[in-house]
Length: 430
Image (cartoon, rainbow, N blue to C red; front, side, top):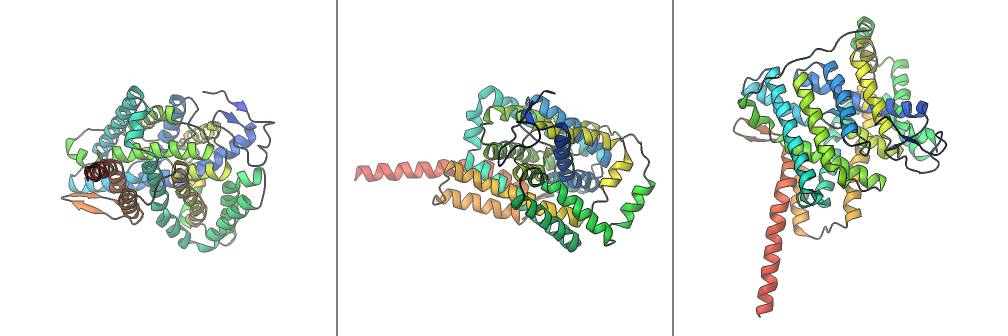
């Protein structure tokens, strides 16, 4: 896994050239892109465990190890960083409230979900990509990618509104560097934008004093806290539907990277599902949050056109190092919410448009009533975060939107095809 071909002279990709997954630039530049990935995923990967009651440094450690495992199993063909999945926050909270589940029981649920995803990956490898194409054609994967990107919009906007000045500075820097500049400044636009926004917040006194104090008091070294899981059947109804969400997110990620990089990654979907499922199972078995492809990192790849798995590996190794240094973790945690909001506003928007690109590349027919009805409804439900209650179970928009797209679309597609054939037969009888 540790071997990458140097792209060109290693100093500049040149123009709009794509740096492929098995390629890398010089190590200083690759480290820069890795830091960019680290900053893109850091906010969510630290926030999710805090919301679900798990140790943040443990999730950071396991996200880094899980990413390295993913890259190993996909043989450097699918660039990805596996960060904490936001989709689990509400279901885990409901399971804790309604079923009285403690952290160990919730971790057991995460571990089981990861193993279910592994089994889906094994089935895809055994039965071939056609199984996946039948269940998740481009019209479905495009919708899932679009829905995930747009569903994160409120998160970016609320962070932006919290500190509009550094957020606007960050946003403006990223957009200007991406559009106007050439070469490395354009490809490192997100990293530069975050640093400029961070500096703006520091100069204007908008750094959170609590986080600054935490940075000052944090020790340089510390061991992440490991927590053993417990499997309780009472938790499973709340978390098992999330296996479909993780499968949809992982497949959507592979399709998105394929569309952006112009490469056929379908043969690696099974490996990606196995790698992502094992990473989540491993995380749940030791005290970490569920892991999934991080939307902000996909946006970063779309902005930079650098798909090198070396950069993802650098980010993963950096996450592992950070997990053993509360001081460095606290340093990155001083990046203001507004700065992250300004950066993710661009990244999540790019991710959403990748879904549209998948549709356009596949010639999806939007005059088809099945496409209009099912995909339109599911996307709006996901974006609007329409939460449904089924007994004690609360299902958020992204969860049931993904489930609806994956399960309902094929059923209605078959019904429409049967009706079309029947009408054609009747016209032939006349």
